[in-house]
Length: 218
Length: 172
Image (cartoon, rainbow over all chains, first blue to last red; front, top):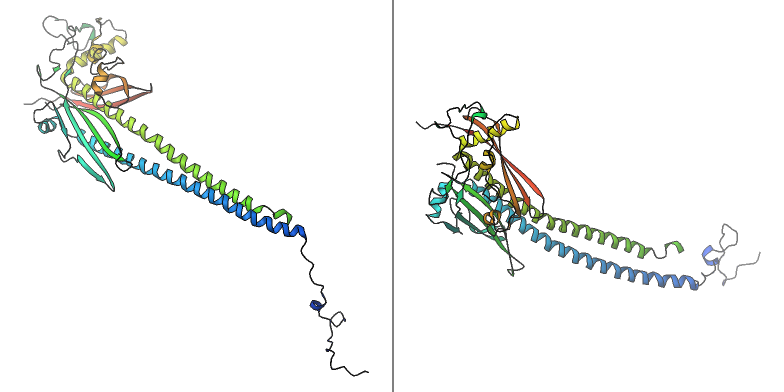
């Protein structure tokens, strides 16, 4: 057996008996093929293009959201105004004819933009939103026509249980002219306006409703 | 590896589509609300108008109860075929009032409806009023039904009905 040379590295046993480590024995990896290099470049382009598309879509979505939010805020103000209108109408319709005429102080037409009868009118804040509520009350002449039933001595055959015996007079307005002259007014027309501003005060908006209050007490 | 090429664009396109779909749905919701609000206002306006007309009709009933009972019951008897006296207009029609009276605002320019609304945006084109007694006890305790039939400016029709308990009392 020949002695080992000092310059030779010791050879250790390996499973395959070759005496070489697999790593040292593996051939160097071949250079990437040209097609694979092109694919890496295409992926970068894809990412950039994708980012561009995503950015565009996000900006578009943000624009849509902003537009939608502005619309929602506008609708929200509109809903608040409707609630205020409804609330004011209901409260005023609860009032009697007599109490309204007291507030009108004998005038045929009155406009109120400050609280009356404990009902909030004038500037009203609903959260951050500001509204202006105005009530207009006006006396309206009303004339009723009818055929009066004739139960006088002229129609002695009158039987309250037999409609065939009933006789009616001509169409008349007698005792039905509530026009402030022949008879006092019995009808008040009520108009409520709720006003507010949009777009930083540049646009005036309003909603309104009318109803009638009658004198059923006298 | 070849099958995965272009996946980034596909995924982003899916995300983009999803974003735009959500945005469109949001816009549609907002647009729907914007369309509903004016209709809510219109219905509110018409309802308050109808409630006012009902009160005007109730005032007429209160002022002329005997004439109303006779006119109404005569109409019922006529409908049953009884030989009642004929009038033109009939007592009940006369009680409701002629066209363009305060209870029968028909579609005539510059007439009752226009006058009643007085520049309001309430979308009423015309209206009629009906009376009905659903029960009566010799004029002492009655249930009166007043119906207001309204035609809107867009030709839709809406009916409002008020039911009132009427009793007769005597002040001693």
